[in-house]
Length: 425
Image (tube, rainbow, N blue to C red; front, side, top):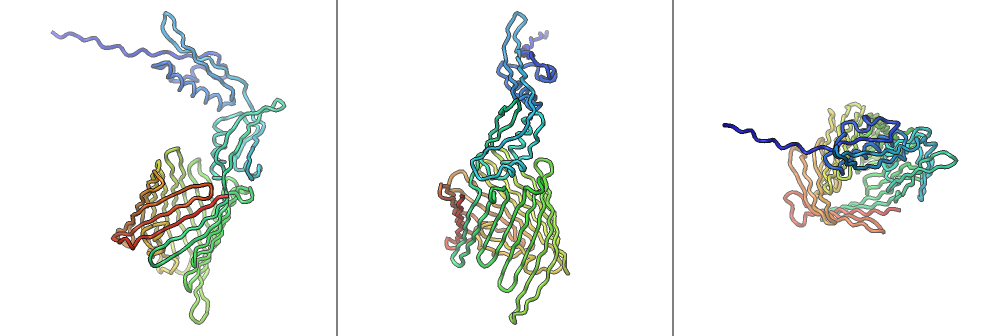
């Protein structure tokens, strides 16, 4: 004989209803969230309702929950006070720094005359913070002469920097110097000057305002190695695609000059074009900055190049993956990539390797001020790596970093030292 066992009844759900709403129906506001397991679960529903209203022009909407208990059982009643529907007459900006209001307003991409929208304000704050000039943006609604305004208060940070760096080993000593401004004369335009000892002189100007949201980069560089010189002038247009993606187009010229022993200069000037694609994504725990680019140089023996840079940070773990490749029927000096040193393999000398293609990874776990580093690469079909330790210190005076790294199979004397000193003002 088989006896049926009673099945435990499922835990009863508490129904949720709304009252006081006029602009939106109760069915639309609650959607599938018409019941909750516990009274405190209603907080998520309230947050969703407030989002719906604040995105439709109701910044003063309030939702008050009440637990009603009668002989028919418990139920949660959400008392909604919609408040006034607000049209934003204009956006006002306050900043204690040097940035001009007109520049901020153009970058913020505000839309006066529309209904209040928390989504639009969140996008405005994101646009402003992307400049790297501001620490935070706080907003509030102010009313003047029966009109409403959104007041954005911006906290600026240092935007002009002096940077000096050097790499040292038992045979060589190199140093670099640069000045860069994220907010040139308060216009949110960028300027950078770089000098690398006996190698590079570079000027770069970034114009984010004139063609907004398209960004124009103009770069002039002069590379010098012994009796050969490369002069570059590039212009790059970067346009956003949706929220996370960026498309780039490059155009410019490159001029090669060779100086023989008899002081006779010869060389050639060629046109270059290129395209690029970027993905930028950030959360409190994850940062991803990924770039893909391809350029083509028109000359007697045309040259094509591919470069992929994937920079990711998860909590305190920095992980970068890079791939480069050049293709031509006849390689010239500046067609080769130069690897080794602080920007690639930190256990090797600066520009130790000349290659046509390579893949490498850089890792650092920056949980404390002294952190481990590890680099690995495939260069000329050979697996190489370097390892070491880094130290980073921040102070009111300046920020400083030191990296000590060793190459594959290297002894203690083969260690390389890389120093970085940065002062913001």
